[in-house]
Length: 253
Image (cartoon, rainbow, N blue to C red; front, side, top):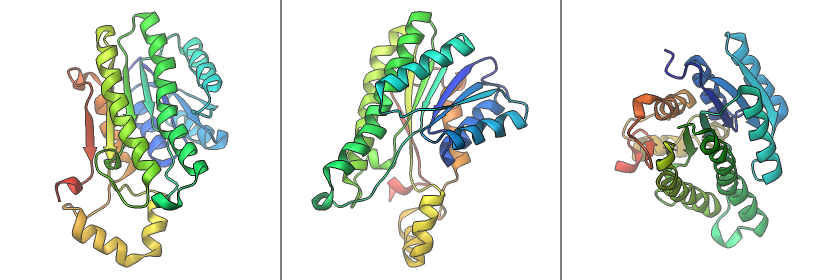
């Protein structure tokens, strides 16, 4: 499959499990991928995996909450590849805390990474796309927590609701330039973080599957990556401003 052949992509959070799966999937579909992560070693490993299968990738350490780092990264990728066709804003964190126990630091860090980071990256890359008259595509990482609330994650929920709103607004404003903007909203995906929580409380895991997810399993990072690739491709050429849920039917319960 080569739906993205000849295109250049940026994947933030590319050293994490969902980001890595996304970067690898985009490369498998023909894209040249800039793997961006706060952790340089993690970004390097994703890029190595892509190159090991014949793909083209570069890696760069970036704090997506810092304007100077984001704009320098976007300019460097643009210079390297000559254009940016696709931005996947995957970077995110989810430090849990109930409302009454949420510290200013927890709130600020979560909003900075999950929402401000998406804004900064979107603005920087969209400006380059507009200047190039390049009808690119942007895919943001929302969450089912951006559509319904969940106890103990007030900052995370707020950040992801913000991503959904930012996605809709950017889609409206960038449509005249031919730039599509969408989001994916994963539910419970099997990552190291979620697996550790569920292994700590097997009864919680069993009840979650039994009572909340009609498909009775957790999603895989590769399934999120496949959905991102769809939205990035011309198969979704008439889709913009949409948040696509990937949750095994959880929100239907």
